[in-house]
Amino acid sequence: MFGRLRSFFAPLIDDNPITVQILGICSALAVTTSMDTALTMSVALTLVLMAASGIIATLRNHMPRAIRLILQITIIAALVIVTDLILQAYAFEVSKRLSIFVSLIVTNCLVMARTETFAMHNPPWPSILDGLVYGLGYSLILLIVGFLRELLGRGTLFGFTVLPAVEDGGWFEPMGVMLLAPSAFFVLGLLIWAIRGWRTAQVEANEYPLPARAEP
Amino acid sequence: MSELFLRAIFADNLILSYFLGLCTYLAISKRLDTALGLAAAMIVVQTITVPVNHLIHRYLLIEGAWAWLGLPDVDLTFLKLIAFIGVIAAAVQVLEMALDRYMPALYRALGIFLPLITVNCAILGGSLFMAERRYDFGESVVFGLGSGIGWALAIALLAAIRERLRYADVPPGLRGLGITFVVTGLISMGFTAFSSVALP
Image 1 (tube, each protein chain N blue to C red):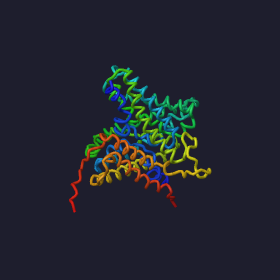
Image 2: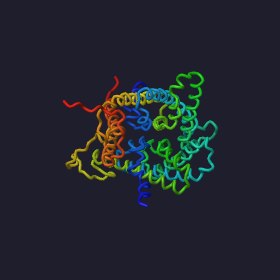
Image 3: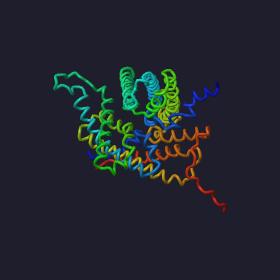
Image 4: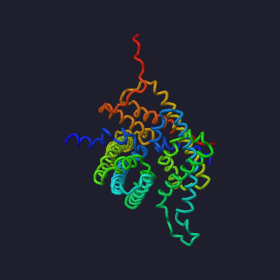
């Protein structure tokens, strides 16, 4: 029982789509300058992934192998268009700031990878659950990166002041670089380092080991 | 025009400031020669698809595009995403067949990279940026070429650095993916300096 639970929750840390499988990074970094965009993107991706897995798993026995990729892309694209229109209707501000990145869920490798490897071979309910857990693994990384970047870059979380900034009479000096592109790479790189320091099984093998240093 | 071209290559680089195409960028940058093959394919496909998508967006999808048929209220913008993906997949397929027929050497060199490009976010992202920023036809040609070159430049830089990294003594937890992100962050930091360069 415990072992099954463990493998069920593996996508959260041990088999995380972003830090271990390198899937879906494209959209992950661009939307993490603030918590609300990161959260919106996480929810959008998780819902699209669950819906796409469910639909594709239901139709899996009716899809001819030769055109299955085109069918999958069309289904995902239709779901993404619906998500995008809903966001524009009910959360216009956030949707403007997310810019093209909601549309780019279509080419997010994570969605294609899960539908192709899992939903094509399993019944609908397990596929929807699989989509949920992978969506949560993706969301976890997005929210951690978004938390660090917004907190250190502006001193706020979800737009509320947490660390009072110097220009408002507080003590915190906002680090502007956290809002620029390079910091997203650094934060994710260091986060991967931290996770691998804790879960040493994830450390990559050294392909080109250095010769042992000669003693002086 | 030249300003748009240079911005697309350096300051608004698709990978280093918009994070587009990162999956491919990380997966194919272990060796310089394969990275260069992918980079060449990327420039060609981007230069073709952005202007073609511009024409489709301008004359078939945007609100009022069907006015000449007596249908001024038809707005098909919501089909943008599916139309762009279709164009990209078709362009890649046609390019693949044309290369196979007329330039077999180049076709063999590009090999598996061409089909991979269909699902690259940088290609779709380039077309979506073109639609969002409302470039005209000339601008979309320049933007397509510039952003393709920018992407190619970034992957060539990273691949060259990663080849040298083999001889570096990296801490175990940072090995592989972690150090690649840190290196990319440093390259990206260098490229942000270009955004303050003003052309005479």
